[in-house]
Picture (cartoon, rainbow, N blue to C red):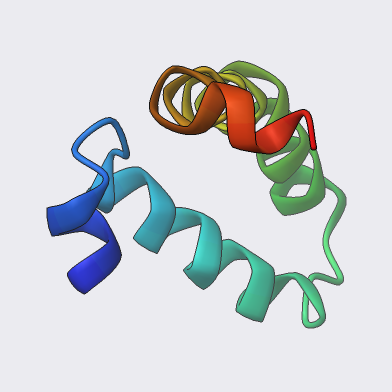
Length: 66
């Protein structure tokens, strides 16, 4: 919860969905659920990682290059 307050560029609900999907992914035995997870990763999760990366670069740009 603290990370979401400190890093306002993070979408808390999306990160919680990612966590739930990660925890559930070990128990996916049906092709349709697996396809939905792949779609969520491509459409939602990868762009969120890119947003977080950009937010971190903006906030810590110089420190990240060390």
